[in-house]
Every structure is written in structure tokens, then in C-alpha cells.
Length: 84
View (cartoon, rainbow, N blue to C red):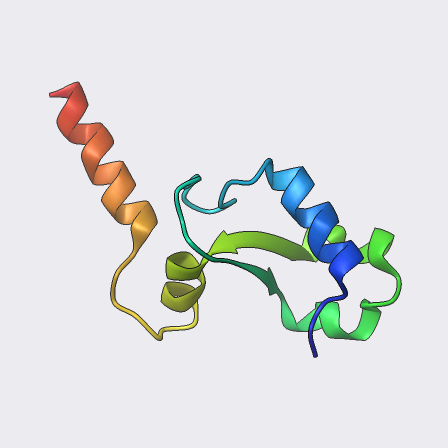
């Protein structure tokens, strides 16, 4: 079940166009991630906005174990390198 476009727009605005997991604003594609509990409440959007996340495609794939690449780990690794 896909989220309606109004809910997707609210998520995009809340996230300010950035992935809410890794902070990327350069991704070519973003996904609206939802926890399984969110399905029951999709039409009561005010109650579920805290269960919905605006993630880049790479973070979404990593979370669902469809990829070994973790953009968040990569980003944290780069920050540690800059501090050294």
C-alpha cells in the first residue's frame, strides 16, 4: 500500500528534502519508510507521522537488508576522518 501524495509531501517538508537517516540531500530518489504499525492508520495521518520516515533509496535498501551499503556508516566514517 503506497502512501498518498499529501502524506509524502508532508514528510518531504518535515525532512527539508534530506534523508532523515543519513542526512543526504544529493540522492536521486527518496522513499517514505513506514513501520508495520503504520499500515493500520494510514488514513489518520496526524497519528502516524511519527511512524513515517523520509529516507534516501540507499538507507531504505540497507534497512530492509536489500543492500550491504550503509550510507550512515559511510558518513560517520568521513566525519571521524575529518576530526583526526
